[in-house]
Amino acid sequence: MADHDRIEGAAKTVGGNIKEAAGKLTGDEKLKAEGRADQLEGKVQNTVGGIKDAVREHK
Image 1 (cartoon, rainbow, N blue to C red):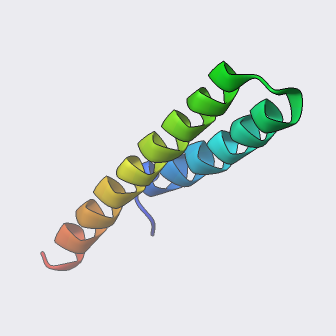
Image 2 (image 1 turned 120 degrees about the vertical axis):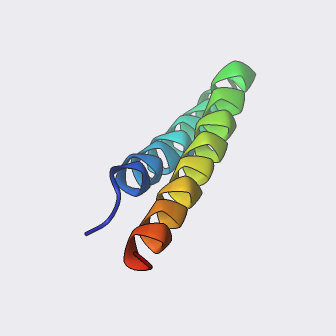
Image 3 (image 1 turned 180 degrees about the horizontal axis):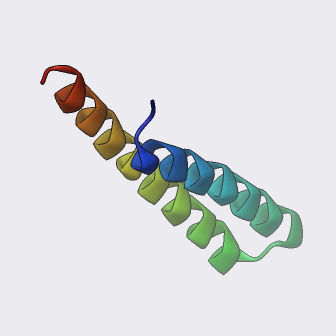
C-alpha cells in the first residue's frame, strides 16, 4: 500500500499544476508562483513517501 505522503504529494502536484495554469490564463504572476511552489512541495513529499515505502519493504 502506498504511503500517505505519496498520495498527498501527488495531489499537491496536480493542484499546483492547476494553479499555475490558472495563473497563466489570468496573467496572475503570484498564482503562477504559488502553483510552482505547490508542485515542488508535492514532488518532495512524494519522494519522502517513496523512501518510506522502500524502508518499509526492506524490514
